[in-house]
Image 1 (cartoon, rainbow, N blue to C red):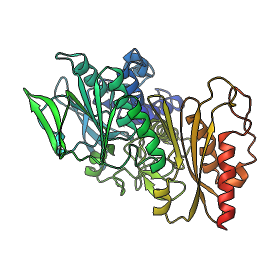
Image 2: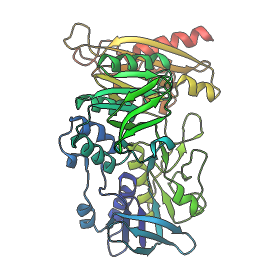
Image 3: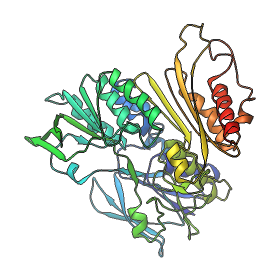
Image 4: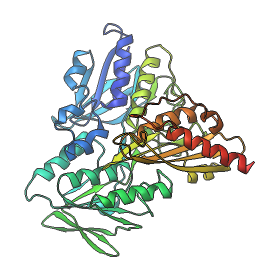
Length: 456
């Protein structure tokens, strides 16, 4: 049997590795195509490498092409697949270095092409110094620009989502004068509710990053082929480097051209086994697919490395004759902005309203440790619960060290449809160096329970 994999990062190589574990080289031939220069790397670590928290590029690479080849995977680097012929079970790929075209037949195909950064038309001009942040190739291009001559002194980051705020911090740590432009009223406006976003904005400004909200970008200004400013209605913002943090879209164009189903989010549609709908032998995983939100039941596109690795593993197990499933997501995510940690799971108020829920909220402030213990810091937790049943619909946390990972306890509660009243009795760990006697999660659950009782 022959497996062809399109994409050599988390999802694609997880699928290939799982299939190889279950079927030896005498039973399964694997050919994988990757158009970039790296495989199996942490794209999430790029801002921390650029900012200096991670010293070595190699630290971001989990498995090199050579390691995959030693495992019996014929990995073709710098090869871009240009067409999929589902009827004849064949892919066509272009050699980006040596030139020429290759064709490979398949019995099974894994489509794992990832996502592409949203790049407005005004950012697609000839000016150099404008970067998206999606692949490790993007990260190396940014590093080369920052290390080049003339050395950049000013940076503009456009978009205040996860990548935007993380890259703004990275630019600051590199010693640049940084401006963050965000079109909504607060940074991370699609991720957290306004009162939490306001705390994020305050923290970013406190580090010396200029934050301009409700900003509109008209275009870029260049000189000598290099970007020199971002043009806005309020005037030009100097920029020796521009980083786009406007989000990503599923890289599904190749799938759509092959007649594979693409959903309303733009992602490839699969079942719980990660088999592409309407096919028997084609699988898809990672940032190129859409998945099901377990609270709303609606299709969503949530591009995270955690999902890509899980989905790739599921696809690899199933195509090799085993059984595994990926049920969906609840939107759990975490990031760090300077000294501030920000996390969320489930639905925000806006998302809960859109889904038709009636809900109550609870907002509490507490500390990460017992108040008398050295190093205790403040954190804010917000819970959103269904008004009638008290079922936890979502949670957000913002605070300093030791705050954000508490979102995991809340994610488990959301996943298992616990009520906030049930959560008040959770047997959470306690010792003064780790938590106050009433953990912030328990305090928030108590307050949310009171709100539910008051509403009913």
